Length: 414
Image 1 (cartoon, rainbow, N blue to C red):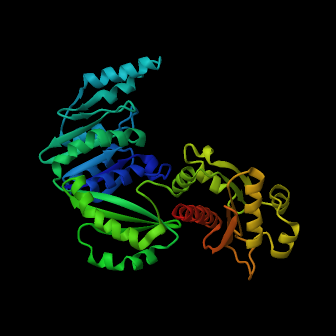
Image 2 (cartoon, one colour):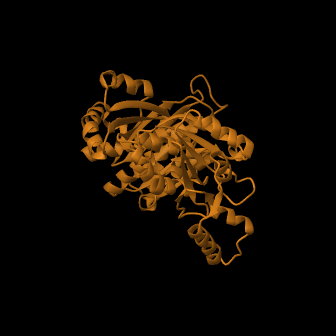
Image 3 (cartoon, rainbow, N blue to C red):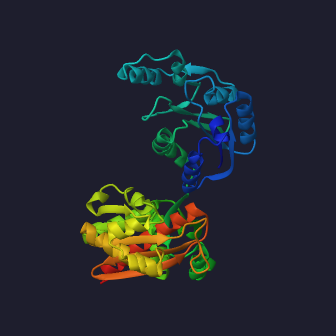
């Protein structure tokens, strides 16, 4: 069974919207063992969409089309699908009643053009939309299948999970089940070198590395008839990978680095204060992504200027004068000052040169110092980062979070 994706929407072609739907659907189809060889994006034009359907069905068994199910004149996905298969459209009474009830509940009149969302090609399987007003549908005809889904991800994702996946399972006896390990502190080439023996001997499951900004994701994928069978196949490989990579692995699947740090702080009942210079609050922003982080994050200070470092964090003027604002000595005093002034258990500080100017031969652009003050000791490290200003600041943020994570993990092992 080969599947092709068609994303409908002029806004996608113009770059106004990032096409996250194609990524999501491709990943889910791969997990079901269904092959995707082509993806197409087409604007809101009936002639070009009909041509896209014709080309797609000439080389694929199934097409998943997303977008173009709304009420406006340029929402043409269903109408064009009906034309391709030579089908008339009919009013689906259940969808109509739900649509009318939606507008009644909103206490606003339903515009006439909304009615088109309740019309479907004859013989369609209707896909319920519990998050919006545009149901999806499936057409099966002469060994070809067209699945049409709404464009907004908050509508598409639950519809795909709840309605489409149960439908698709009949086409695949074997699925592909993946577990992703998230790695920080070593690059992709080093990860591959460390896992060379496993990579060269892999059969089922397979492993693959993916480079991210200052991270590596390692996906272990097993082909199996069930999740339980896949887990049994993957378990020894995952155990061997964990043994080799050790604490370079910070989490699994959807776990973000800041979540791993938050969980360690929470489990150890420790509080944190941040002093950020070159990162300008980016570390705090990452941690605030975690619900409940106020239990552990007391404050974050953006101490960009020297005066702030001196007045707010009690960094010695002599320290900055002798070693510079970007130095291990200043970072240490920033971390100590952040912890002391807030009453937190831990102080973390970052200072560096993000560029594009300001570097010297002795202190080049990309030089960053990180310090962690906890349990009566202070540790620091330096990083020499590459990239533009934004990339350096992002990598410094990741470096600081990972440094703190490792210190907290070491504390757990004591």
